[in-house]
Amino acid sequence: MLICSDNNTKLELRTPSGKYPVKSISYSDPHLLVSDPFMWNCQDRDNFRPTRSFSIDSSTHFTVSPQNDYLFFNCNTEKVIVEPKPLFCERFPDRCDSSCDSSSYLCRHLPECGSALGSRVSCCSYYPKATQSLRLMLQNCATYTSVYWRSTGVENAPYDQFPEYGIRVDFEFPVTMKCLLCQETTKGGGVCGFNTRTRDFLCLCKQGNVTTYCKDPSLVKHKRVGAMAGTVTAVSAAGAIGVAGGVYWYLRKVRAKAPVTCGVQSNENRIF
Image (cartoon, rainbow, N blue to C red; front, top):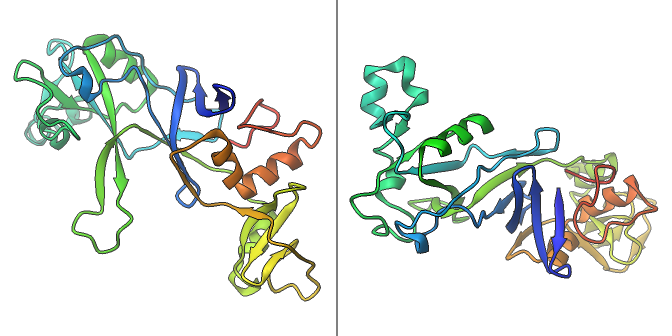
């Protein structure tokens, strides 16, 4: 769940494996990008610190994105299959999924610090399919890090993605019938949001904010005091929650007597 710390100035994702600072949130492509201070980073170079395995509670609406790549360093080759994956998979197709790819592009081109590791440090890429697989890898490797392929947002660019350190966590949130009607193109194609004073649902339209949908003939217009769902970067606790228009409105409906002031506070009123 999402929690706030440092006097409500820092948004974090709390999972069974710990608390992780939220770097950014996207609602158009629903996901969080979080960082793990225990993972290897460029400043560590070949000084490998104790780490921990990242995990997500499967009972929530969060999932670890398949767009993450995990890099493992100095693995015990007697316990871990460290091989160039294309050649190894061709020779041993039945063991392909169990191998850690030593020919990985990211191992040869570490983001932001290509020369941070010397020749004495080995690197391989492997995507654990379960939390237990990640724990077993860390028992036999010095440390690891996660790289997420981030979209440039530029259409028709030669390269539309670039690697960035962090863990992408996908999420889904309930969409109410009011929100679906608001977004319906034939009914005006509005944006789901909320009244910043009352926290009631609003459909944000070009001609003004309404309580139903943009082309409703009996609509009641309001002054533009709404906030809409969008994309948040450089997340602060207040900013992330304020932008999540439809999400915040849903939280209020779930538990009106206990308004959420920062993130998701309990299993009863959580949105994710």
